[in-house]
Length: 192
Length: 192
DNA sequence: CCGGTTTGTATCGGTCTGACATATGTCAGG
DNA sequence: CCTGACATATGTCAGACCGATACAAACCGG
Image 1 (tube, rainbow over the protein chains, first blue to last red):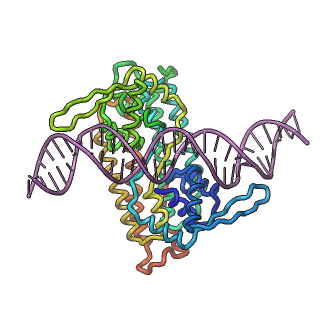
Image 2 (image 1 turned 180 degrees about the vertical axis):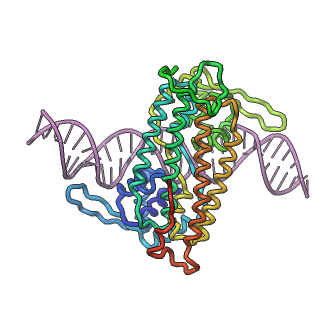
Image 3 (image 1 turned 90 degrees about the horizontal axis):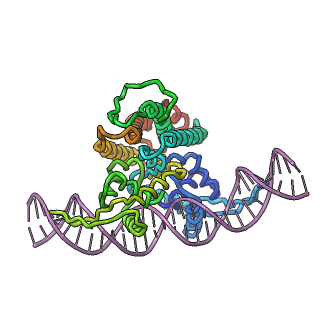
């Protein structure tokens, strides 16, 4: 999906500056949906102006730097809805944490647990962020997407919290590979 | 995360060709963890040879084209473990489906439902794919990651199936004009 | 023997990332 | 009142990446 389309989507709801658009995707209502960076947003907005899919005016603010506020044009709305009608690509995930974690056998046990702790903290932040975006007036489809994100984050957190403990318990001497689910020994002090 | 690191990770377990590495990330055990494309893998493998982090030999096959099989070197293992020790970036998600879905109010109701159906079918395929990767001999940390992916996929599927029905119920009969004020909060139900 | 599918390697234009540069303004603290 | 830390705000750029395409060898059904 093109950064231009993402910016148009952000502008569909209300006018915004580049900085504000970014915040919609980082901590805002789109944060669980799509990642896009500064380096894509500003060039995309310039292109939107060229194509007259958006207009721009400078807003002077008291106590803050000026900002360039972009608004979508009727032609922009048409272009956006046309872009939405294309067949969407499948979801793409990029989790460095899980990738590193999957090589946990080659890492110190403490590093693995630290990594999981950081993972949990990260998802707690994300969950809190989109919880703040809640709004009683969300139309049904928006609420559908919003709650989807919350559900996924909560599931991830529950899994991580629950099975982190299992990993600690399962720490074993060399030979035992067969992991019997259901067998839990009380956590001893010594990690390896 | 660099494509070089991802390739080294794939080679940590066993030697593989570029094509086989790709399959690990598309439908294989890494498919729920990280997306990486052909255009990154082949150049990365060339760099690995340059740095002597991997070696390569041509394997002639009967009934198939020859392939270039890469193996990680001791220096490659060192470089990989070093790369793992860097602080991981937060997870990045890119879901065109959810993005489009969040503008469902501007689309025909049937298009929204079709989109959800395609979303469900996509996740069913993904779940089936990593289910096939299951293996009783997985060490604990690998199993942790494997089951994490399964849990996330299953949660997504359950949410989509359940709340798709809600969206249908909320549909106002035939009169096309989007959401009627006052009706839209009603269902939207529990996230728990 | 033709077209379709799978396996396999490789490249390339266009796009995106992540870090950096630049600037204005607040606020706490010395 | 100066400094440093932080938030707001716009923008650029080298390098990395994506997705489409090309090429090729082998299989298989009709």
